[in-house]
Amino acid sequence: VDVVDRIDVSEGEICMSPVLSDMAGTRAEGTPSSYPDGKSFGAFAYYNHNQPYFENHKFTSEDGVCAGDDPVYWPLDGSLIFAGYSPYEGANTAFNPVTKTLTINDYTVDRTTDLMYFLPELSDGNYVGYDKSTASVPVKFYHALSCVSINVAVKSGDENVKLKSITLKDVYTQGNFTVN
Image (cartoon, rainbow, N blue to C red; front, side):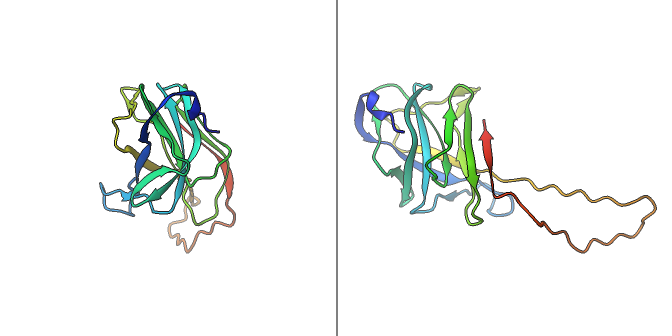
């Protein structure tokens, strides 16, 4: 649901310049990669840190810059904070600016995409807002990875143990994600 029509807007369209965070072992440290062209993500914006400006709005990347599929514009005054997720699913997603919590419910893994998220920027625990003087909102996506923990134990007295393989026989492909 977009709620941008309740606040006067300027002529400047809101654009974002997302990058993907470093993942250990996949990219050289300190060199995040650009968000892929043609891919979409959902974003939330809150006016003066607590009033909904737009919610779960679809942005698509083209030439390294993302703009709303339906353009959204900066307010005439005040600032905005942003949160979001990728890939864009359109439903069951919310951001609560009071608790600083992004929630994605009933997310289904299709084994070809990686669930990612970004939260509003904080400084000393307080939101950092952006205004119409911002050329492009800097967004850094983080990976919402699952943790697989495998514990292997041997009985007392077993000195030579040779582990040949570990096989995951079943994994959950749907779940809920919450981050703050």
